[in-house]
Length: 117
Image (cartoon, rainbow, N blue to C red; front, side):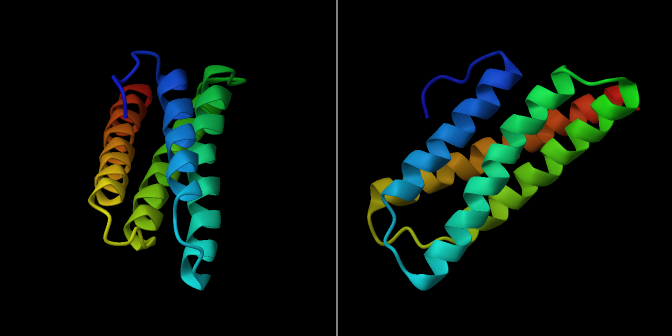
């Protein structure tokens, strides 16, 4: 991934986009097809709920949206772990970079949640 943007909404959108770029290059195995569906959903949900948090109806809604963001980032880490990226080193590197980004987003969401509680 390129340099990380400062804006969290943009950063989560770029994460979802990078996930989609990776999955386009994966082998189509039965397990990959199912795991990729889940990964695409969870990574997109991180971005969508970040938008929702910024447009929250109140503080409780904002807190809940960031909790969902954190949950979906954790879930994205699991699906990234489970997808088969083959033996290509560049694929493994891309998968590892996305896993790290999901981890960093999870840490950011945790800090926001603690601040809001």
